[in-house]
Image (tube, rainbow, N blue to C red; front, top):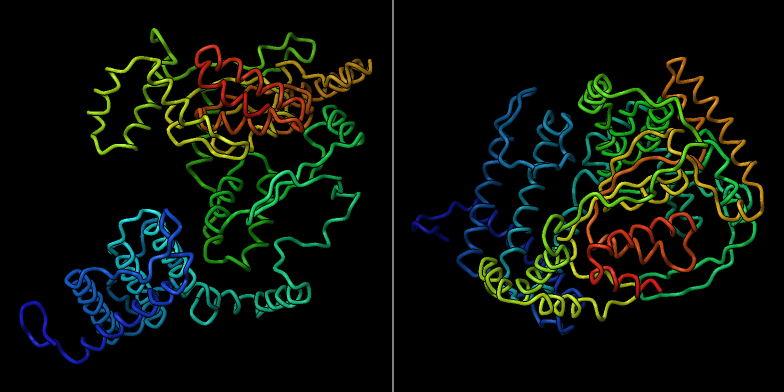
Length: 538
């Protein structure tokens, strides 16, 4: 065997060539046997995976073999306690191997870099496959990434130095807890994501009648019927303060957990920091590699402290008797300040849809748009949403139309609204200076005075705490009925999702009313764009 210059390749290098080719070929042959993975956009499966062109394949294998040889030579030449040169580096943001234990040991350093070389070869091969169908190509790339991530040495006890170190530091406690969890899961016949013993029906777990309103091969959507007790609780909680205990669940992958814990550990509230540390202590046994880097962030805390010096202190005056501001005010929208805001928005949507359906440059598409009438662009938009079903996501072009709105809403409503993570939220701390929201059922029952009495009592406590310089403690006295100021930035795409979810028949009254007001505000400027979303919600 010779290289591109005609030189004879050494036997050791030939073995590395063969090993790389065998590993890649074995993986892609196994992938080809997965019929569903090979389906193109028409649903037809290809008979065999097309491998990269011979010349490109040879170049990738040559690079792979040379780097493997360099890695092996580097490991053999390392002296005890001496750091070796890095032949390959993890991708930016990949913290799986950032702990010093991976590089301090020649063995683990070799395992780490050999894995990265193998992963790089498989990724390049998947990206270089001559597959014209975009759907089939994306499936191959996705499955390749899953395969690569699953075989990471950080996932296995024997090849993860951080796991070994934690086991030694805890004198085997981390392993014992893991085995206990595994045995418990085997007895139940399923993998547990939470502690089942922590929940009891009627105490902290609801049992509500419901029915399946939609299902497919992946999921079931269940709509629960609100019972009288549930409605009563929803309204009664407006009198409760934010100091009241509640149950909260958190789900997410290890990387999301690290980011969340960093923010929580940097909170100005002591309770939040304490809970975050408890979470970190609990999950470090399962994801020690990433969670160990979740700490208080000096940028977050320092910036907050600097901004506190130049912003006014919390208000301590008007309370629930003050007139409430408008619940929803649209601040900005696509096309604001133009003669026809909706036409400006349609330019963005129609332009994106035409661009996706053509081979023209964006400049050429813009010229085509300039020759179209508003009705022409509106027709393109209508075609993009006319078949939109109850559970469908609208076309991505709707993300190009944006809005910014200010909300003055109850704490109860805000805690529902903030779950919409595709909206960029900017919010003030809880306060008592923006009035209260009274549930219609409370007003209809003639007991509004009781709610006002409860909110006024909380305002007295709030004022005393602020007067004592305890503004962080004062927020705990705010009730769920008190209004908070919030600004949200969102797209038309997210507005469709919000209307569909929060204006449905079973939606909670408060957020349903707020969403309806938001839709009306947007409809003043973009009526034709909002109409299909409202029609779908009905």
